[in-house]
Figure 1 (cartoon, rainbow, N blue to C red):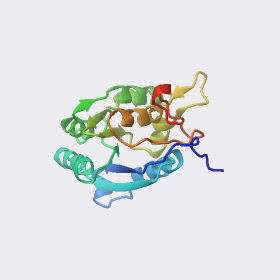
Figure 2: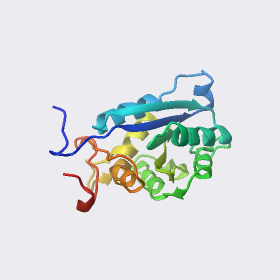
Figure 3: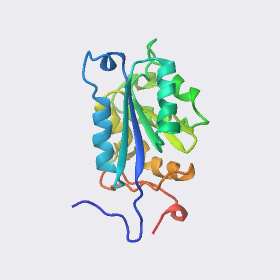
Figure 4: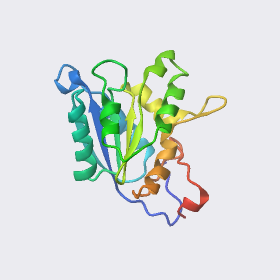
Length: 200
C-alpha cells in the first residue's frame, strides 16, 4: 500500500535534475548506471509528482558548471543530484564545478556521506562530495556507484545506533531556500522538519 501524506497536505510537483558525470559513459564506452539508480531511489522515496531533467556529460569542469547552471536557471530544477567525478583523480572535478556555481556551500552533506561510506570502506575519506545552494535550488554531489548512492541517501537505519542518510534533511533545506514542499515515503526515508515547519 502506498503511503499518503497527512490529511490536508497538498502535494506539489517538483522538478529534479539528475546529472551523471563520466568520460566513458558520455562517450558510449559503457552504459550510465548513475541516473537510473538515482531515479529509482527517488521514485520510491518521494510522493510528489516529479518532472525529470537528465543530463550525461564528460568530466570537464566548464561543461559540468554550465550544465548545473542550465538545470537550475533555465530548466527550473528545485533539486539537482550529480553522480560521479568526486574522487581525487585528475579528471575528477565535479566538486570544483559545483562550488564554482554556488551561492552558498553546505559542507555538512559531504561530511555525512563520508561518515556513511566509512562503515563500508576506509577509502571513503578520499571522496569529496559536497552540496550547495544556487538560487532556489539545492545541488548535491553523490557517489558514482548505485549501491553507494542508495546508502548515502537512505542511511543505515538498521545499524545500532542508526546512521542518518542525507535525504532526511533535503526536504527542509528545500523549504528554506524557497522550493516546493517535498513529501517523503517514510518507509524509505522519513523527512525531518521542525514542528513549526510541518504542514498539516
